[in-house]
Image (cartoon, rainbow, N blue to C red):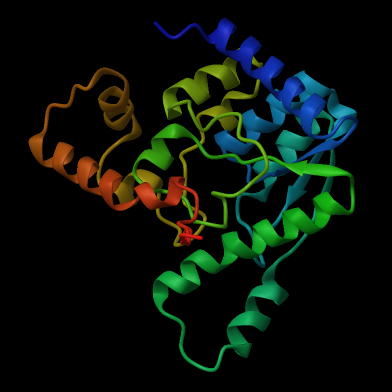
Length: 241
């Protein structure tokens, strides 16, 4: 039922319209990890704006074992790119905080530093920052608030993992990028190891409401409830004046 041609064409048009309304002649700035999401978002931006208006930013934290995938993507698309190693910023910030950070704080700090770096690059290059999240990850809160969950426009946040892959194949991305096993980039485990279920199961539940295992359904529903706040605007007190 997923019409990949229609969705791809509509998304490309949507990106063009966004830039027409929110920054004529601006550049799309995309954080490139080498995974399917950043690859597909970058490819969509190239299709919408042309490769000369897309800037990729590679942001390893020290040594990134799979940075060759990010390099493959920028070569394949023929886009400009810069490398910003965040290790010194990460180490400096951790060393400056006068107490031991919790494990979750350490895990979420790199994506938040990366987003700060993206905005610094973007503001210095007439840019708009692309969000690279997808619906499946957002559904269960698998994104860092004010980290990879931030951005100025989001081409794929209403597409499931399976749909993002379909768009990537339609755009002619190398299979090694589209089918790369997603690793969270935080603690080194695969997404599905951390979640406890596969994206195929999650995507079917999202789109069809069908799931075979009651325990998995309960876990997905619980994660969805707990993480709704990540997708909402910051609550603001409204004084009665």
